[in-house]
Image (cartoon, rainbow, N blue to C red; front, side, top):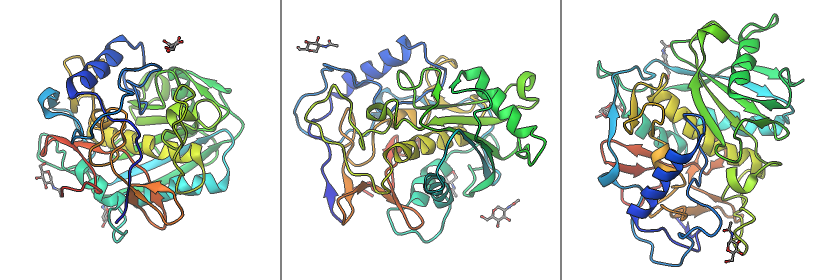
Length: 348
Ligand SMILES: *[C@@H]1O[C@H](CO)[C@@H](O)[C@H](O)[C@H]1NC(C)=O
Ligand SMILES: *[C@@H]1O[C@H](CO)[C@@H](O)[C@H](O)[C@H]1NC(C)=O
Ligand SMILES: *[C@@H]1O[C@H](CO)[C@@H](O)[C@H](O)[C@H]1NC(C)=O
C-alpha cells in the first residue's frame, strides 16, 4: 500500500505536547466533553517547526487511563440519529455508511471494523466487553430547526426530547443500548462550536428529557470553521502554505464530521455516563479514549502531524475502508498497548 506523507511539519517533543494539551484542557471553559482535532494548534504555535518524525502516537508515560467502575455499552449498540436542519440525501448516505461500516464484516483492510476492535477491548466490572455490533437505529428529521439556528448545551437536550416525544414516529427510548446522535447542518451554531469544540457527548437529564440517554452532538463545520473541524480536508487561515488534503467522498464538511462521529461513538461506548473509562483526576474534565489520540490518524502521528496515511488512486487521502467507501478516522487509545492505535498501524 502507498503511504501519503501529509504533514509538512513534525510534532513537538512529547512533554511539550502534553503540556499544551493539559493547558488547553485546564484553561478552557469548554463543555466537559468536547473535541476538536487540534487543541494545541494555535497561530504562531511553537509546534509549527520542521523536524524529524519519530514514533509518537501518544505517550504512555503521561497517561493514566483508569476504569471508574461505571457501565460501558456491552449490548448491541443502536445509533439513533436526529438530522437537525438542512441535510442532503448524499450527505446522510456518507454518514449512514460510516456507521454501518463499524461492525461490517468483510471490508477491505485496513477497515473501520478493525478500528472498532480497539474499542471492544474495554470492559466493565463484570468483564463484559464493549459490543462488537453497532447498527443504525431510527432517524428523525428536524428540518425546520425546532429550537432555532443557535443551540446551547441545554437546548440540545430539548431537541432530543422533541425527537423522543414527537407525536409522529418518535425516536425509540433505549437507555440500555441506544446512542443518540444529534447532527446539525452547516448553518447551525452550537455553543462553543469552532472555538473549543467540533462535537461532544454527554447524557440527557431526566428533568429535561425524562430519561438518562447517552448522546452526542456533532456539527457540520463547512460554513463556520472547516479549517478547525474538517482538518486536514480544510486548513486554518493562519497556516498559509499548508494545502488541504483531498477528501475521499467529496464533501469536506461531512467528512470532517466522520472522524468526530467516530471519536464520540468510541467515547460513548467506553464512558457513556462519564463514570467508566477516562484519565485525569477531575471527573469534570475527563480525558477519554479518543481525546488521548486527537489528531492522530496513522503511524508516527502526534503534534500537528497526522501520521502516515493512504492515498487513493484519485489523490484522496484516507486511512481505513468501510462498506463501499473510504474514510479518514482518528485513532483511539489502547489500554492494552498503552498507546494510540488504528487498523492502518504499520507495526501490527
Ligand atoms: C503571529 O506572528 C506574527 C509575526 O511574527 C505577528 O504579526 C502576529 O501578531 C502573531 N499573531 C498572534 C496571534 O500572536
Ligand atoms: C475483551 O477485553 C479483553 C480485555 O481487554 C481482551 O483481552 C479481549 O480480547 C476482548 N475481547 C474482544 C472480543 O474484543
Ligand atoms: C446482536 O447482534 C448480533 C449480530 O451482530 C445478532 O446475532 C444478535 O442476535 C444480536 N443480539 C441481540 C440481543 O439483539
